[in-house]
Length: 147
Image 1 (cartoon, rainbow, N blue to C red):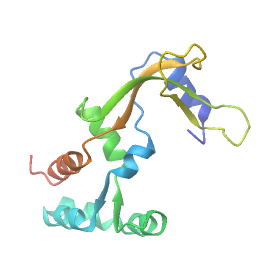
Image 2 (tube, helix red, strand yellow):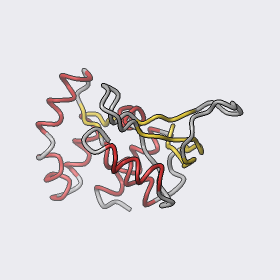
Image 3 (cartoon, helix red, strand yellow):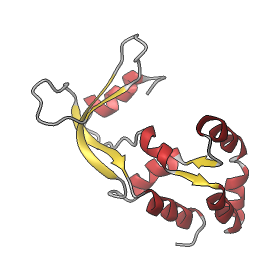
Image 4 (cartoon, rainbow, N blue to C red):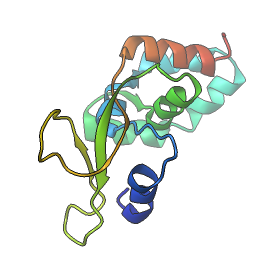
């Protein structure tokens, strides 16, 4: 969004491609603990390999969020693409700031309903919540090859 808001706006606002943004506010809540990562590593060579490349990311999240774990941003978004309905979505008006102000690249999601002054923008499904524990369990099962 930040590096190419015009492209993001084309996809989210100007096209009719089915799209479900998964905001970072949601993915940050879906971080996995050291115990989760140990369980993944213990599941076999693929899990061990995945966990081994995570060290720099774990260090980053320790500094930034104060958690000993990892945020699985992309895995959460991909999970919704593979299993639609896994995340709790709401149909909302969305726009992307494309001007040269400090807000450039911001995604505007209007959660109000019934307002005449609501911003123009295409209504799309936006992921706002999830059963975080169930999501973590599902990702661990799939990534470890248990199901």
